[in-house]
Length: 481
Image (tube, rainbow, N blue to C red):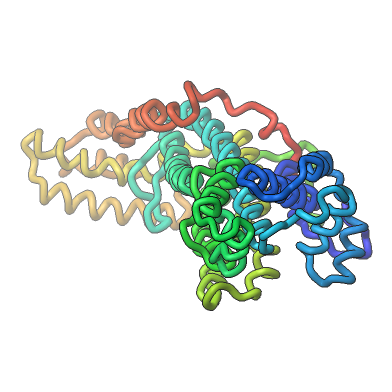
């Protein structure tokens, strides 16, 4: 918790998971810096640089015991964060003092660490995406055949099913997951490139031996878990990588916002509610209120994330020549906050999906209010099949539909179109024929089968088998509302 007299990011205080907060913590970031310094020194030594064994051992013994107070002292004096950590590392491992950061520029450390953090951040988001998909899969299976109004233009259209709509939410996330996986699978390391990316300092270290410089880049890259590095860089890796990462994160947030918007509308219709705590207060004045606050929070956080997406391209576009420093302060905020906010969004999404409350009776009432209109196409077919005049029947349906709509607008309790047609002596179908078209399940098309096919062909391979019922730590975790 923050001190009450100081600002503290709500993402850290209220929304994001402990796992994601730990990833972007100063401890994790700067311990990575030390691991990169160690890997660099080890590989330089293996290639013949004069680095004593005791220096390597000292560095290895002090990877995590970072004295942040000491770092702050150095930074006040040096006004350079990387050099402050170089000195603090040297204070902890004096036997390595003369070789820490040997040949390196700051971006050799900071940029590679950022790529490691982003890759790990995507791993956390990926698992949360899987959790959401698993939970929605259970929901879709449970409600695969429940008829509900479909909407186009926010107006009632042909019927679908509650489960089919859930697969639409899932499909968006499946596409997000595919883009995420392809990005992570192909993400390059910056590598060990030195100032302005020319590797000049390393060439000097190895007395002009180009092969050793190339080997250093490849060896450090592999040792830190990447299969390849960028072939060329300026002082930093191209900020297009940040833009690609933010685009993926923005896509996930957009999918979640679409889901949350649907839930908010469905709750306003009384068809489906997001979960609510027993003692949860909806309004300080209106005690009866039950508001979709979790879904609204997704919408708010998603809007924040999407506002960050263009930022990365804007930053890339002004990295003149080999680099400018106006990216630094910006990226310190934008990249971690984007991951933290998206993490919070997915926590909310799995919580909502695992506790959605469906109200079939309310859904059916709303279906029946529109169903007679949806049945008119089949009624026309029956008229013609029985030898009637399609055009005359069409005119009768049009006239009675208008009358039924006006009656409902004037307070009628139900849509009585079928009754009106049955009572019209000129209409060629009787009440029995007309009543047989009033089963909602006749108008959902292949929606139930589409649910089954989607779960078997798409969801289950991603989820590693038959989806469970969405119960687990993620669902049970407390969500601040």
